[in-house]
Amino acid sequence: MAAAILLAAPFICRAQDATSSALSKPEAETEEIVVSATRLSTPEDESPASVTVITARDMEIKQIRRVADALREVPGLSIVQTGTPGQLTSLFTRGLGSDQTQVLLDGIPINQGLAGLFNFADLVVDDIDRIEIVRGPQSTLYGPRALAGVVQIFTKHGSGPPVSEFNFEAGSFSLFRETFTSSGAVDKFDYSVGLSRLDTDNDRPNNQYRLSNGIANLGWSPNEQLRISSLFTYSRADAGSPNSIFDPRPIDNLLTERWLVAPHIDYKPVEWWEHKLIVSYDEERQVNDPNEDGFVFATRALFQRFTVDYQNDLKAASWLTLTSGVFYSQVDAGQHRPLVLFGDTFISDYTEETAVFLQASVTPFKGLNLVAGGRYDHFNQFGDIGTYRFAGSYLIPKTDTHLHASVATGFSPPSSQDKIFGNNFGLKPVENLGWDAGIEQRFWEGRVLIGATYFHNDLSNVIGFNGLFETLNLGSATTQGVETEIKVTPIPDLTFALAYTYLDTEKTSSADISQLEGARLPRRPRNEVYVSASYLWCKKLRTTIEAKFVNAREELNFGGPNFDIEDYAVVNLIAEYEVNSHFSIFGRIENLGNEQYSEVFGFPALGRGAYGGFKLRF
Image (cartoon, rainbow, N blue to C red; front, side, top):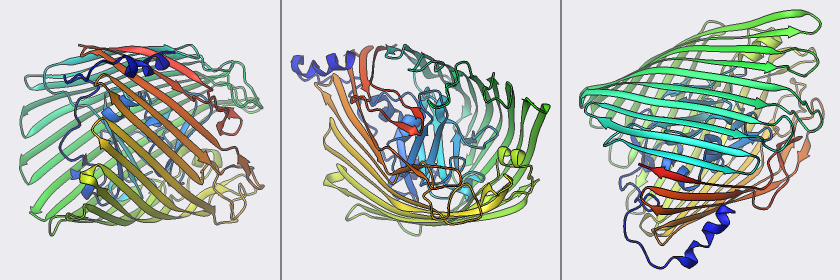
């Protein structure tokens, strides 16, 4: 197997190669900049929020192909995949619902579909520069669905002479993947593009998965003050839907097609005043054919959204920055459902939102950052809602200690699915009061980082079912826990990382009959551990081993006590060898121990798989 062959390379490596290479290129010397926590460029170690940044380099080292797999190593996040790649893939942030984390692409909300959540199954890392994860309520800045936090994905901006890369890989489960990326700048124009194709049969009948993706970020900068650009994305996923092992469906199939276009204007007329405008339109189309549930024939769904997001940053004084803005969104979601007993039915939902927000960022002296903000949202269906956020951080230079804390409110509006299937368009949004406090400590000239954060969330207006299967605002719940991480770089080419999350969740209402009062929220593990080690041998070979352990999960047993889902531990082995600056070979073994497990009960994940390929840079 390719990964095993590459692991032998250290024994045949003769000398230390001092030349610069793709594998050994140095990390940026400047501090990592975070935008999502405050909508302002802020050094990561001064951010007044619990933040994790995953760079393109991080994903390249671990051969990460999907955003979901990058998020698996982040403390406080749980990724739950309904079986194999291509099936529904959900994110739970700090134990909160999968429709309660706002996902953004270059500042554009991309949560889609009738359920209001974001399905990470088809989101690949082509042309992605970095991912910022901000945990805790962020509705003051990002509005709907930011009740639990924000995952913001930033695409690359082309600069310098054009460069391109082609990747090919093949392996277990009849997998073939081809990827092409290119970026650069010519005079006043810049571009970055990513194209990819994935074909795999996975491991069960009717489990095939075909995915085509395209993304482009095109820009024009007539001067240093102005950049006019546009983001374009397209994806087409064709997946067999075998359902659970208890109810197999031999011919059910789901076709999903998405596209987005989003012009941007970034204008900074003077050093102390900046404007940002994003106008976006996106669509999602789904066909479930033949929909083998015995009640509904083949269904078709359409999701359309138009948004306008304007942000104004005014540096009123050297110690005060005011961020204000307006947001407008209209969403039209509908589904054609030919019912077996009642004939054709078309169900739809139209939601319109207008919002204004204001944030003050105060830095009275170096190291101290205080943030306060508020937001007002108006919806055409359920009226008005206001949110607030207070946060602060303090960096102690002498000890290199970073303290941070926040308290905020957040909301998540009822999804079209909640309103349509419950025939209740008067539902109120789910609300959250959350707070956290944490510390990050660096030692040994920054080679060691230890961080820990405690968090607590109180949810109200949780949407649930009564005895008549109507959707109502019936529930309440709490989540709390601790996120910890350790990163160690004892020598430049060796890195260790560990992330651990302890999570306690509880349903605190008896009105919603779907689950008993006092029960643990389903599919939220109590303990999650991620650990990895990576080393660059002879400036030519990068090897990485990573492991994920998850335990104490429960599955919903509608109306009765939850039942336990088995614990699991998965180990991956990754390697890449650079033949020269233009050509590399790589390989990996996923699920090295051939662990038999399910993240969702009855939907088994893949067993051991080996993959290998090459990378061509020009």
